[in-house]
Length: 317
Ligand code: TXA
Ligand code: MG
Image (cartoon, rainbow, N blue to C red; front, side, top):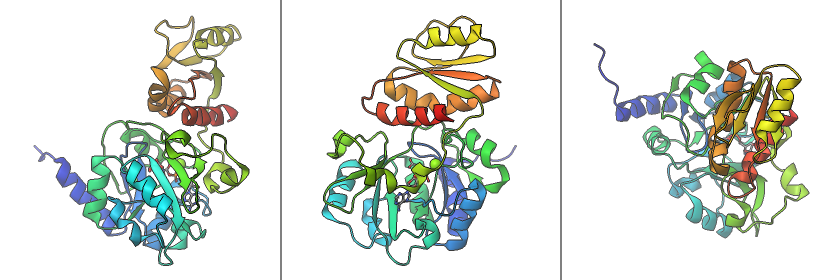
């Protein structure tokens, strides 16, 4: 019988691969990341190749602890210090001025660096053991939904990744909130489960915020089936009309009753629940041969705003 691989052993082995310039996919509380040594240009280039990611879309650097910020950030202004103290470890990414020794492949040549400390024991143990800051985008092929299980990573990236550390399904399910923390007030570049209210940011995005995050320009979260949104509580009606029009219809709903003629792909309870299942549901719908997936909307409370943002991008397909 092969020896059992215990978690600390798996983390140590994955960390050795990272330290040697390899690619390691690992779980975080948001989605799985595809990690490499953020300070090694050759290693970071492999991330872009594996994902098919445009070179001008910079990566988030993951640290085990806020005390390591000085390894990648040139300065840590008071606002950033405050937000890190309030929200780390957690799903908040801070954009700061980069140290000049952070390779431009990592920063997209922007002169800034995005950093976060993930709230996941395996992720932090891995980063600590590797002893390097870890650049990690979501571990999907570019343009696919972010992976929330190790199997999603294997499906998308296969042999292009050296190691996948399986930590089970991700708790949050949508990517971190990205905030430019260089100025006097936080500028939200990407919505996430840390809300504008929690950050003390403005309620509505302003033009400079939307322009400042390269990733938001690209087509994202695109499943191969059509995605249609339904108002809260009305996924069944919308699905029934689509079934009548012909084709295989899937539903992601908060309701217990199965809509006539449609397949229930996932059920959820509230905004947190939809965030946790949305990306998996998009992939499952494809695998089930669904032509149209009806997803019931949630309120904008908490992570609701971020999950609606992702859902509308998928529906815009
Ligand atoms: O939750 C997450 O953030 C996950 C996990 C793995 O940590 N990571 C993730 O990475 O979603 P990625 O690469 O899929 O998205 C990073 C986003 C992109 O929209 C990118 O353009 C933006 O962060 N970003 C990265 N560096 C930036 C910078 N220096 N300035 C502005 N935006 C930046
Ligand atoms: Mg991504």
